[in-house]
Image (cartoon, rainbow, N blue to C red; front, side):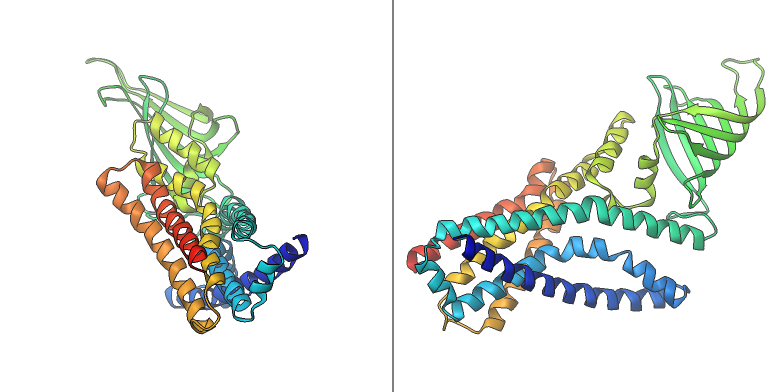
Length: 363
């Protein structure tokens, strides 16, 4: 059985890697054309920027590559009667399902590494390069800056405007508006720049602080400082969520960002849904293997191999589309976030297992 597993895994790895390279090559070519037409970057910089998107692309298409490669291998083994020989050697349906599920778990681990480590790191580096090209600022609306709400304690509500974020992570043109529970302005702080010191502490430089009077007849207190230490729970991870999309963040950073939004009384359902999707998405590797296994039990003369591979690609694409649609439908219908995220896995996993059992019984 160990020999069969080694042979099967070697075939699956080779086919999956080949399909993944084809998909990434096609997406790379299309992205390069799109980038060259949309911006004025040089050709070398465009290639680098698109190359930094490859981990995210691999994260997105790896489940489809796994399904396509597995369908090709299993249907090919069935067509050449090799799978029949494996069954005679002791590869029962239960053992075959366990072996392919094990391969799916290996793919799930790879998807998790891509989505939680490689893709976020590449996206941050890409944002840094874009910031340098844009003169040290990035964001969706550089003229208006970035706005962040941050609550420090029960009676300290802050509205923060950041004019720009340098490629080094330094904040520029920072304006802080401190409000009370009645949304009355208590204090304003303007700083030319701010740098993160760690442990939820920022250092403001070239600061002008204005303390407004608490009642009529009071005096406005204006203070100028060379620097001011500003304790706040707003971390660079929170700012990453404003510059990068939640899909590009790691699970831990996204969880911290959701905790920050919840502490500030902001809606978190959309981000919670994205967190559940990122947690469940690696399991798509297992679902893809469950969808591919019935192709091994199709009769050798029941169709051409190319049509089976095409059917596998369509199954993978439909799963990705269902995953996106179910999430949006869950938001509109106010479903529990875990149900909206898990519904495609439950439907496709249940359908694949049911079809597999029905096919094995008939065969």
